[in-house]
Image 1: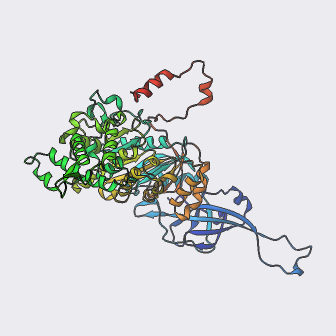
Image 2 (image 1 turned 90 degrees about the horizontal axis):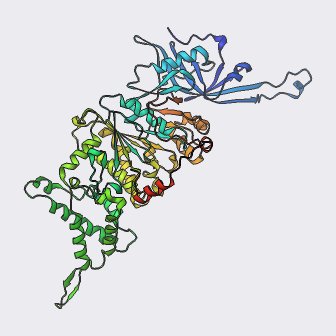
Length: 581
């Protein structure tokens, strides 16, 4: 039976103005007006039978009636000037009493607008509960991902459309301590239950280590302590050998663009790397690759071969017109390039790049690495690890954008070059995204390479089965292009004005007032708006099964403990070894 059975005498007021999705309600009963609050739900009569329009209160005003009164009427017996109690409502959808065999169906469409003098009712008490249950149990919204419960009604579960959340990309934002990691862990909880789950989470600070189980596969980028150990993929250690880097990444890492010889260095490096890759391939076994590969083709090559060639060109002497030797065209112009390459090669922090185990220099290794990262849960050898958590905590900050974007590029290229029938969808979750997807005006040369890769994924990923979830405490510092492609917003408390402005711009114009709630949300509470959310509203995020290691330290309680927990000598030892392992 229909859940809305309002009677005319229950009306909050009547419609006096209609403007597309904005409706003005005049309220005569002051007591009913007092009970109303901004961001509460209302129900309006539709011009079509069996339908009710659902709206959100965005403004409540009281002002004197401006009707002019003659001087003669202004005597002692004249009643006080009347007041207009006005409520501005934004329409967000329609509840239909019946659609075919189904009853009480909510749709985010507006087939009609209310007529002038149509009644408006406040949605509260039992009717609110029944409506929220309709939202929770809606059948035509597609796959359901349980996020938590609606703040309006704790008994009603808040679901997201799992398809639309990843197809249209999403952004999870909030100030530090607001519950971003909690929300991320909740999303992973839900994904982990799926037999074909496929997610890669870039864990920048190593805080998702506590998420364990058969569904999770933990990998960490190799640190200095892994140089001699020879640990590899089977040990959960991931190396990213230099030959995986594309041309732009190589140039940004080794060429100083401020150097007057930078164009020559880039050109020579391109030619030399191509020669080095050709030298590593067998002309018979790899004939097909040799015919088609480019500098961006992921082919292992010997870095010593590269350095030898560069040194020869830097010291080259050629015959002059008079028969006497003279300096070659690149004599002395490559010394800075060689110096930068050697310095980075000898930097133990970059061991995962320049000193990988021997197996990483063989062509078959890349097949294993790509399969480990990109294959879904059922495709993994042990049927586990649908959710891959990659720990970047030991990667130096100056190369972090290049390394994160390298893995993103590998995932994108794998999907791009897969036959459409064999393309298994994958979601990339980017924790602390502001560190490696910065706004372009703040990006340097290495950052710009990373930004370009993620912007391409944001714009084209959907076509190749790649979903993007951007997670950040500073959305104002994240690429606007990437954020503009995220059609789902899970916004937790934001206290910075610039961050609030960025998120408000992502909200529909009709829901602009929702952005005013950003600084007053509770910890673990979020505004959820977008294609995946049937009802734009506040949601209290449910507790994840396993909590990430990002809990705020209780300063006062720790200071009040009887036993100290510090280990400064251990910290110094780890610092010197450049490893926590």
